[in-house]
Image (cartoon, rainbow, N blue to C red):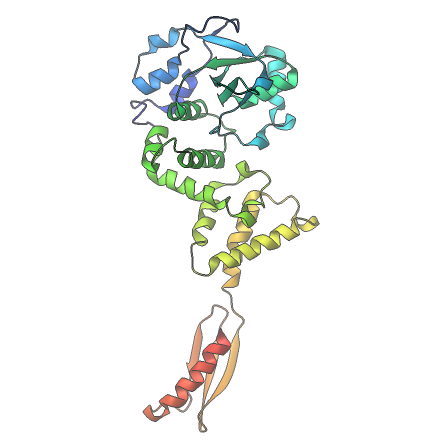
Amino acid sequence: MASKLFGGTNLSDIARQVKDRAEVSPFDRPAAVKPVLPAAELALKGRTAPDLERRENVFLVDPKRVRSWAHHNRLPTWYTRERCQDLIDSIAKDEQQEPALARRLQNDPDYDYEIIYGMRRRFACEVLGRKLRVRVTEADDARAAILMHVENADRQDITPMERALSFQQLLKGGVFPTLESLGDAMGVGRGQVSKMLKAATLLEQGSIGSLFADRSAVPVEPAYKLAGLLERPNAKEIIFQAARNLGKDAQGKAGQGRAPAEVLRLLIASLDRSTKFSPLQKQYNVGSAQRVTVTRNAKGKVTLAFPQGLRGADKPEVLKAMEQILKDLS
Protein backbone atom coordinates (compact mmCIF):
# COMPACT_ATOMS: atom_id res chain seq x y z
CA MET A 1 0.00 0.00 0.00
CA ALA A 2 1.50 3.34 -1.04
CA SER A 3 0.97 6.72 0.56
CA LYS A 4 1.11 10.22 -0.87
CA LEU A 5 3.30 11.32 2.01
CA PHE A 6 5.62 8.41 1.41
CA GLY A 7 6.24 9.38 -2.19
CA GLY A 8 4.77 6.13 -3.43
CA THR A 9 7.09 4.02 -1.28
CA ASN A 10 5.55 0.77 -0.10
CA LEU A 11 5.03 0.72 3.69
CA SER A 12 6.16 -2.88 3.96
CA ASP A 13 9.48 -2.02 2.30
CA ILE A 14 9.91 1.00 4.56
CA ALA A 15 9.21 -1.02 7.68
CA ARG A 16 11.89 -3.53 6.74
CA GLN A 17 14.37 -0.69 6.31
CA VAL A 18 13.62 0.95 9.67
CA LYS A 19 16.19 -1.17 11.50
CA ASP A 20 18.95 -0.42 13.94
CA ARG A 21 22.06 0.89 12.18
CA ALA A 22 23.34 2.53 15.34
CA GLU A 23 26.30 2.27 17.62
CA VAL A 24 25.73 2.74 21.34
CA SER A 25 26.89 6.12 22.59
CA PRO A 26 27.43 7.12 26.21
CA PHE A 27 24.39 8.79 27.70
CA ASP A 28 26.35 11.90 28.50
CA ARG A 29 27.56 12.48 24.96
CA PRO A 30 26.94 16.13 23.89
CA ALA A 31 23.57 16.58 22.26
CA ALA A 32 25.07 18.60 19.40
CA VAL A 33 24.59 15.70 17.01
CA LYS A 34 20.94 15.73 16.06
CA PRO A 35 19.51 12.22 15.74
CA VAL A 36 18.14 11.34 12.35
CA LEU A 37 15.84 8.61 11.13
CA PRO A 38 17.20 7.50 7.75
CA ALA A 39 14.42 5.14 6.69
CA ALA A 40 11.73 7.50 7.90
CA GLU A 41 13.37 10.41 6.11
CA LEU A 42 13.50 8.27 2.98
CA ALA A 43 9.80 7.62 3.38
CA LEU A 44 8.83 11.23 4.02
CA LYS A 45 11.23 13.11 1.76
CA GLY A 46 12.06 10.62 -0.96
CA ARG A 47 15.76 10.35 -0.13
CA THR A 48 17.80 7.65 -1.82
CA ALA A 49 19.11 4.47 -0.31
CA PRO A 50 22.68 5.74 0.40
CA ASP A 51 21.19 7.89 3.17
CA LEU A 52 20.42 4.68 5.01
CA GLU A 53 24.12 4.13 5.62
CA ARG A 54 24.37 7.05 8.05
CA ARG A 55 24.82 5.89 11.63
CA GLU A 56 22.96 7.34 14.57
CA ASN A 57 23.45 7.82 18.28
CA VAL A 58 21.55 5.43 20.51
CA PHE A 59 21.37 6.03 24.24
CA LEU A 60 21.16 3.61 27.14
CA VAL A 61 18.47 4.72 29.59
CA ASP A 62 16.71 3.47 32.68
CA PRO A 63 13.41 1.91 31.47
CA LYS A 64 11.73 3.13 34.65
CA ARG A 65 12.39 6.70 33.49
CA VAL A 66 10.54 6.10 30.22
CA ARG A 67 6.79 6.33 29.66
CA SER A 68 4.49 5.73 26.72
CA TRP A 69 3.74 8.48 24.21
CA ALA A 70 0.17 9.72 24.65
CA HIS A 71 -0.76 8.42 21.18
CA HIS A 72 1.07 5.11 21.38
CA ASN A 73 -0.96 2.36 19.74
CA ARG A 74 -0.17 -0.41 22.22
CA LEU A 75 -2.87 -1.13 24.78
CA PRO A 76 -1.78 -1.76 28.40
CA THR A 77 -2.97 -5.36 28.17
CA TRP A 78 0.16 -6.14 26.13
CA TYR A 79 2.58 -5.44 28.97
CA THR A 80 2.52 -8.74 30.82
CA ARG A 81 5.16 -11.42 31.25
CA GLU A 82 3.01 -13.88 29.32
CA ARG A 83 2.69 -11.68 26.25
CA CYS A 84 6.25 -10.41 26.35
CA GLN A 85 8.01 -13.64 27.33
CA ASP A 86 9.33 -14.24 23.81
CA LEU A 87 10.93 -10.80 23.78
CA ILE A 88 12.24 -11.16 27.34
CA ASP A 89 13.93 -14.44 26.38
CA SER A 90 15.35 -12.92 23.19
CA ILE A 91 16.86 -9.89 24.93
CA ALA A 92 18.21 -12.07 27.75
CA LYS A 93 20.01 -14.24 25.18
CA ASP A 94 21.00 -11.85 22.38
CA GLU A 95 20.66 -8.37 23.91
CA GLN A 96 18.23 -5.75 22.56
CA GLN A 97 18.73 -5.80 18.80
CA GLU A 98 16.56 -2.85 17.81
CA PRO A 99 16.35 0.43 19.75
CA ALA A 100 13.05 1.96 20.70
CA LEU A 101 12.20 5.40 19.33
CA ALA A 102 11.69 8.13 21.92
CA ARG A 103 11.44 11.87 22.48
CA ARG A 104 13.02 13.72 25.36
CA LEU A 105 10.69 15.15 27.97
CA GLN A 106 11.09 18.48 29.65
CA ASN A 107 10.11 19.38 33.21
CA ASP A 108 8.75 15.95 34.05
CA PRO A 109 10.04 14.85 37.48
CA ASP A 110 9.14 11.19 36.88
CA TYR A 111 10.22 10.52 33.30
CA ASP A 112 13.01 11.56 30.94
CA TYR A 113 11.64 10.10 27.68
CA GLU A 114 8.39 9.11 26.01
CA ILE A 115 8.33 6.07 23.75
CA ILE A 116 6.89 6.45 20.25
CA TYR A 117 7.40 2.78 19.50
CA GLY A 118 9.09 0.02 21.47
CA MET A 119 7.05 -0.20 24.67
CA ARG A 120 7.33 -4.00 24.76
CA ARG A 121 11.10 -3.60 24.59
CA ARG A 122 10.90 -1.19 27.50
CA PHE A 123 8.84 -3.69 29.49
CA ALA A 124 11.24 -6.55 28.74
CA CYS A 125 14.28 -4.50 29.73
CA GLU A 126 12.62 -3.47 33.00
CA VAL A 127 11.83 -7.12 33.80
CA LEU A 128 15.45 -8.07 33.10
CA GLY A 129 16.85 -5.11 35.00
CA ARG A 130 18.71 -3.88 31.94
CA LYS A 131 19.16 -0.50 30.32
CA LEU A 132 16.89 0.28 27.39
CA ARG A 133 18.41 1.31 24.09
CA VAL A 134 16.53 4.29 22.62
CA ARG A 135 17.01 6.35 19.50
CA VAL A 136 16.00 9.95 20.20
CA THR A 137 13.99 12.04 17.75
CA GLU A 138 12.57 15.53 17.72
CA ALA A 139 9.67 14.57 15.46
CA ASP A 140 6.37 16.34 16.05
CA ASP A 141 3.21 14.38 16.81
CA ALA A 142 2.15 13.96 13.17
CA ARG A 143 5.53 12.60 12.07
CA ALA A 144 5.77 10.48 15.22
CA ALA A 145 2.43 8.90 14.32
CA ILE A 146 3.68 8.09 10.83
CA LEU A 147 6.93 6.62 12.16
CA MET A 148 4.98 4.46 14.60
CA HIS A 149 2.75 3.25 11.78
CA VAL A 150 5.76 2.50 9.55
CA GLU A 151 7.48 0.56 12.32
CA ASN A 152 4.37 -1.55 12.89
CA ALA A 153 3.37 -1.99 9.25
CA ASP A 154 4.58 -5.60 9.07
CA ARG A 155 4.00 -6.62 12.67
CA GLN A 156 1.49 -9.43 13.07
CA ASP A 157 0.90 -8.74 16.76
CA ILE A 158 -0.60 -5.29 16.18
CA THR A 159 -4.28 -6.08 15.77
CA PRO A 160 -6.69 -4.24 13.45
CA MET A 161 -8.60 -2.94 16.48
CA GLU A 162 -5.41 -1.54 18.01
CA ARG A 163 -4.84 0.38 14.78
CA ALA A 164 -8.46 1.52 14.79
CA LEU A 165 -8.18 2.80 18.37
CA SER A 166 -4.89 4.47 17.50
CA PHE A 167 -6.46 6.26 14.52
CA GLN A 168 -9.34 7.35 16.72
CA GLN A 169 -6.95 8.74 19.31
CA LEU A 170 -4.90 10.61 16.71
CA LEU A 171 -8.02 12.33 15.41
CA LYS A 172 -9.41 13.14 18.85
CA GLY A 173 -6.05 14.48 19.94
CA GLY A 174 -5.87 16.79 16.95
CA VAL A 175 -2.68 15.22 15.60
CA PHE A 176 -4.46 15.07 12.24
CA PRO A 177 -7.24 17.59 11.58
CA THR A 178 -9.40 15.43 9.31
CA LEU A 179 -10.11 11.83 8.47
CA GLU A 180 -8.71 12.45 4.99
CA SER A 181 -5.38 13.81 6.26
CA LEU A 182 -5.05 10.84 8.61
CA GLY A 183 -5.74 8.40 5.79
CA ASP A 184 -3.23 10.11 3.48
CA ALA A 185 -0.55 10.08 6.18
CA MET A 186 -1.04 6.40 6.96
CA GLY A 187 -1.56 5.26 3.39
CA VAL A 188 -5.03 3.96 4.18
CA GLY A 189 -8.12 4.62 2.05
CA ARG A 190 -10.81 6.94 3.36
CA GLY A 191 -13.42 4.17 3.38
CA GLN A 192 -11.22 1.86 5.42
CA VAL A 193 -10.32 4.60 7.91
CA SER A 194 -14.02 5.43 8.30
CA LYS A 195 -14.85 1.77 8.96
CA MET A 196 -12.07 1.42 11.54
CA LEU A 197 -13.14 4.57 13.35
CA LYS A 198 -16.76 3.45 13.48
CA ALA A 199 -15.73 0.07 14.86
CA ALA A 200 -13.63 1.80 17.53
CA THR A 201 -16.61 3.89 18.68
CA LEU A 202 -18.40 0.69 19.67
CA LEU A 203 -15.98 0.22 22.57
CA GLU A 204 -16.99 3.62 23.94
CA GLN A 205 -20.45 2.24 24.69
CA GLY A 206 -20.17 1.40 28.38
CA SER A 207 -22.33 -1.70 28.58
CA ILE A 208 -20.69 -3.10 25.44
CA GLY A 209 -17.08 -2.00 25.95
CA SER A 210 -17.04 -3.47 29.47
CA LEU A 211 -17.62 -6.96 28.02
CA PHE A 212 -14.09 -7.06 26.57
CA ALA A 213 -11.20 -7.53 28.96
CA ASP A 214 -8.79 -7.26 26.01
CA ARG A 215 -10.03 -4.66 23.57
CA SER A 216 -7.17 -5.31 21.18
CA ALA A 217 -8.71 -8.72 20.40
CA VAL A 218 -12.07 -7.30 19.27
CA PRO A 219 -12.44 -7.97 15.52
CA VAL A 220 -13.12 -4.88 13.43
CA GLU A 221 -15.61 -6.25 10.90
CA PRO A 222 -18.34 -7.47 13.32
CA ALA A 223 -17.69 -4.45 15.56
CA TYR A 224 -18.34 -2.21 12.57
CA LYS A 225 -21.53 -4.14 11.77
CA LEU A 226 -22.81 -3.87 15.34
CA ALA A 227 -22.00 -0.14 15.47
CA GLY A 228 -24.14 0.27 12.35
CA LEU A 229 -27.02 -1.70 13.86
CA LEU A 230 -27.03 0.63 16.88
CA GLU A 231 -28.09 3.43 14.55
CA ARG A 232 -31.34 1.68 13.63
CA PRO A 233 -34.53 2.96 15.27
CA ASN A 234 -35.29 1.21 18.56
CA ALA A 235 -32.25 -1.07 18.17
CA LYS A 236 -29.98 0.51 20.77
CA GLU A 237 -32.03 -0.47 23.82
CA ILE A 238 -32.42 -4.04 22.58
CA ILE A 239 -28.68 -4.44 22.03
CA PHE A 240 -27.77 -2.67 25.28
CA GLN A 241 -30.12 -4.97 27.20
CA ALA A 242 -28.45 -7.98 25.58
CA ALA A 243 -25.06 -6.56 26.61
CA ARG A 244 -26.25 -6.13 30.18
CA ASN A 245 -27.51 -9.71 30.19
CA LEU A 246 -24.13 -10.94 28.92
CA GLY A 247 -22.43 -8.89 31.60
CA LYS A 248 -24.50 -10.61 34.27
CA ASP A 249 -23.78 -14.01 32.71
CA ALA A 250 -20.05 -13.23 32.79
CA GLN A 251 -20.22 -13.24 36.57
CA GLY A 252 -21.14 -16.92 36.49
CA LYS A 253 -19.76 -19.97 34.74
CA ALA A 254 -21.94 -19.51 31.67
CA GLY A 255 -20.27 -16.26 30.69
CA GLN A 256 -16.65 -17.14 31.30
CA GLY A 257 -14.23 -17.59 28.44
CA ARG A 258 -16.33 -16.08 25.65
CA ALA A 259 -14.14 -14.82 22.82
CA PRO A 260 -14.75 -11.24 21.60
CA ALA A 261 -16.04 -12.52 18.26
CA GLU A 262 -18.60 -14.69 20.07
CA VAL A 263 -19.75 -11.76 22.21
CA LEU A 264 -20.29 -9.64 19.10
CA ARG A 265 -22.16 -12.47 17.39
CA LEU A 266 -24.53 -12.76 20.33
CA LEU A 267 -25.15 -9.01 20.42
CA ILE A 268 -25.87 -8.89 16.70
CA ALA A 269 -28.19 -11.90 17.01
CA SER A 270 -30.08 -10.21 19.84
CA LEU A 271 -31.57 -7.78 17.35
CA ASP A 272 -32.63 -10.62 15.06
CA ARG A 273 -34.27 -12.45 17.95
CA SER A 274 -36.22 -9.35 18.92
CA THR A 275 -37.84 -9.19 15.48
CA LYS A 276 -39.34 -12.69 15.72
CA PHE A 277 -43.04 -12.84 16.61
CA SER A 278 -45.23 -15.39 18.24
CA PRO A 279 -47.82 -16.72 15.76
CA LEU A 280 -51.29 -15.33 16.43
CA GLN A 281 -54.83 -15.87 15.21
CA LYS A 282 -57.71 -13.94 16.75
CA GLN A 283 -61.18 -12.75 15.78
CA TYR A 284 -62.65 -9.29 16.40
CA ASN A 285 -66.19 -7.99 16.11
CA VAL A 286 -66.91 -5.42 13.44
CA GLY A 287 -70.13 -3.91 14.62
CA SER A 288 -72.90 -6.32 15.55
CA ALA A 289 -73.06 -8.28 12.31
CA GLN A 290 -69.48 -8.90 11.11
CA ARG A 291 -66.18 -10.30 12.29
CA VAL A 292 -62.55 -9.97 11.17
CA THR A 293 -59.93 -12.69 11.59
CA VAL A 294 -56.38 -11.44 12.32
CA THR A 295 -53.46 -13.79 11.63
CA ARG A 296 -49.77 -13.06 12.36
CA ASN A 297 -46.91 -15.41 11.42
CA ALA A 298 -43.46 -15.79 13.04
CA LYS A 299 -41.97 -13.15 10.72
CA GLY A 300 -44.51 -10.55 11.79
CA LYS A 301 -46.67 -10.59 8.68
CA VAL A 302 -50.27 -9.69 9.59
CA THR A 303 -53.31 -10.71 7.52
CA LEU A 304 -56.86 -9.45 8.06
CA ALA A 305 -59.72 -11.51 6.64
CA PHE A 306 -63.33 -10.26 6.37
CA PRO A 307 -65.36 -13.39 5.53
CA GLN A 308 -68.50 -11.33 4.73
CA GLY A 309 -66.65 -8.65 2.80
CA LEU A 310 -66.74 -4.90 3.43
CA ARG A 311 -69.14 -2.07 2.63
CA GLY A 312 -68.68 1.65 2.81
CA ALA A 313 -71.18 1.83 5.66
CA ASP A 314 -68.92 -0.44 7.73
CA LYS A 315 -66.09 2.15 7.85
CA PRO A 316 -66.72 3.50 11.40
CA GLU A 317 -66.93 0.00 12.87
CA VAL A 318 -63.85 -1.18 10.91
CA LEU A 319 -61.76 1.75 12.17
CA LYS A 320 -62.85 1.08 15.72
CA ALA A 321 -61.88 -2.59 15.38
CA MET A 322 -58.52 -1.61 13.82
CA GLU A 323 -57.64 0.54 16.83
CA GLN A 324 -58.10 -2.45 19.09
CA ILE A 325 -56.18 -4.75 16.72
CA LEU A 326 -53.20 -2.38 16.55
CA LYS A 327 -53.19 -1.97 20.31
CA ASP A 328 -53.15 -5.74 20.81
CA LEU A 329 -50.46 -6.36 18.20
CA SER A 330 -48.14 -3.71 19.63
